[in-house]
Length: 347
Image (tube, rainbow, N blue to C red):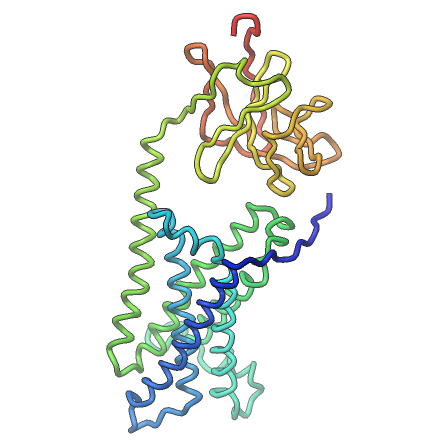
């Protein structure tokens, strides 16, 4: 019942992916520092540390913007899927770049304060009641904290340990983190920038993220509306006794329909332990048994026999014109559904 730590399995694609990311970061930082110095306002000389602060900060912003574009792009066009497969590597590197930006800010702006630096960081600006002059430090701290949490829990160990629902909900922190970053930049660096180029890129990046998500959501909603609520499974006798037929409901969802004792029941194909393919298992001792690690679930409610507490989603079945159909809408994990009975002699 324990979760086993499995080391990352590196391959050529991962090495190439990471190499391109690191190369991009290096080129961007060098280009920003080289091109940023001549554009600096010499009535207020810009120190090299400030250029590095801006270089790493803007780099983290553009990286985070691109990360949030990968998901909708992959849903709109499958050619972007290779970017999606190793997106967690992208996120970890982005958190690292943002952390370097934060350490430069902390070391430069709070290095000579008479108060303890951490106390000064929090108490230097408390004007929360106004827009211009809003404490951008609080926005930056929140965003950096979210990115570091997501980077620390990006490994598959945490996905298995926390479970897919909790892990996915946690990683939705990327959206409030991005909104905090947008506000942090808009109320901070953007107010002081003299060159309009960054303002244009900033607006295009943040606007592009919003537009892509709206387009992808609209397309996905239209596809779901077009799809039938009920999906054909076939004849009951097409399924072997004590075995299952796996039906693909969507690219991310599969249902397993089990036949036993003249009845049919449908449950999620993913085991609650480590997403093992339940439909490739069979019914043993009156329970669906996962072929990977032997986790078991009752057919009618998707619950593990006591004293275990694992649950999986269940689905409704119905007869139609001598065939069986499954409702594509999953019921909450552990929901009881009466088995669909059929006459084996006439089916």
